[in-house]
Image (cartoon, rainbow, N blue to C red; front, side):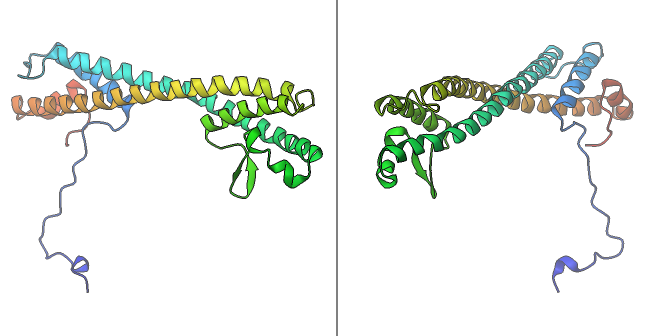
Length: 230
C-alpha cells in the first residue's frame, strides 16, 4: 500500500494553512492599496528604508490607472472582434456565387484553376478564403482585382458586394491589431505594477507586526487589512 495512504501517528500536529492577507482580484487589490496608503500617510508608523509613504500612494494610484486602462482596451477590442465575425459570415455567403460564376464561364474543374487568382485556397477539404485575418484581407484584394479581370464586376455578387466588405474588413483588422498591441502593453504594465504593489503591501504588513508585536491585529485592521493571518 502506498505510504500516502498511511495515517499519521496520533498526536501529529496538523499543518497550518495560512490565507493571504492580500486579495487576488485586481479591483479589490487597488481598493485595498488606496485605503492602506491613505492610512499610512496619517499614521505615526515611519517609512521603510526602501519604501516611503508617498511611494506606496504612487504605486496604488498607478496600479489602479493601469488596471482601468487594460480593462478599457479589452472592451474596445470586443466589438471589433464581433463585427469581424459578422463580416466573415457575409464573405462565406458571397463566395459560392463567385465560384458559380467561374463554373458557368468554364468547366467546373477548369474553373478551379482560377481559384488562386481570386484568393480562394483549399483549406482542409473545402475551397475558401484563408482563416487568418491578414491573409484573408490579402485574398479579398485579389478577389476584387480578379472580378474586374474576368468581367464579373457588374454581377450581383461582383464589386458592389465585395468592395464595401473588403474596405470595412481592412479597417477592422488594422484597428483590432492596434487594440491588441495597446492591450498587451497595458496588461504588461498592470502586471509589473501589481508585483511591485504586492511586494510593498507585504512589506508593510511585516512592518506593522514588527512595530506593534502585541496589538498588530488591531493595527492591521485600522490600516485596512481585514485578514489576520497570511
